Length: 516
Image (tube, rainbow, N blue to C red):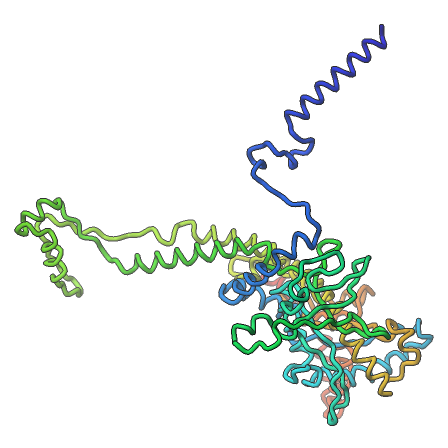
């Protein structure tokens, strides 16, 4: 009896649960297919490449058009370039001397020699295949292309010349040149112009010999020709540098940073342009004259011709001047034209949309619009610190996938030329090519307070002079060397004692005074 009752209860419970599941459509509300809010939300379950590659050409073309023509989108891209690349990335070679069986003194001497040689190549146009940009210019171009296209491509070339020491050069190319030969369909091992192995690692890249868009110029002789470029040489030297983010596993191409906000940007542009056009049109109309007569009365008054009334009024001229009295036709009324444009909520609405766009781009609203008029010190500092965290991440990404690979290619040649001593370079490549890259300085909101904070961090042992100098895009060794020269010169001129006495005076905290 008890077993029968128990079985009946279980069946009843399952029946109730089934009814609830049927009525709710899904255990997770976000997976419901019948709710009015979600029923019209179609989604796809494609792989990373299946979702991205068919849409990539359109996303890239629209991103470029937006940055070309939209003031805020263009400014956002420039802000990112200025804060991530700035004047370029400075090499700070940090070889892993422990792994190489060396000491710190050897590492410092080796680093200074390598950095000096690197500057002789990177600060000239010898590093560019087109002989027009320095390494800083190439870096800015690579990062901007990564923003617009979602990826950037560069080809390390070997171009020996009689009057140049190094033969290594880099050619930056447009991502459209990377495509399947003869525009074949994507397959398991060939996707978006990249041959991959069974693990997804790139094996070779198929590159057009010229940009497909050059056909518009009428001179694209090789627009339909492709070349297969292996990813590496037989001894491990890179043949292609492909810089892009991977949001999902199995993703072979990059996605423009504006992809998530293209629609919002375009709609905002339409809205702002419409408001501006309406405001201009409205500003051209000062007043409106109304008449109580209907069309039949006007026609009878003008001898049966209604158009004669308008013709007569158009010929009527009134000279506007101070204190002018404007005579009107009998029954006419003069009413001022007071349009409600721009709309009263225009500014607030645009600001809200731009805040959402800034969130997607990793830029606070204040930095996106370069507007700090409504921000206090604490809010501005919090916003800039959050932005700086994003910039540092992008800097590390750019250094890892662009600057360090180029440095490795150049160092390989320098070692083979006998300019740099690096025994067993190919066996210890990572130990020799380990480096830090110093980007643009963070800047200061309150120089006095932040300088004191830097001193406190160093005194507490949680920071170093190297770290603090890097925050301001400075090399700590150059700073110390310059200070030593200045100190020696002041001592020579008898100014050292006065300088030391001045440095001992307490610094007034301007922020505390303002708060007080």
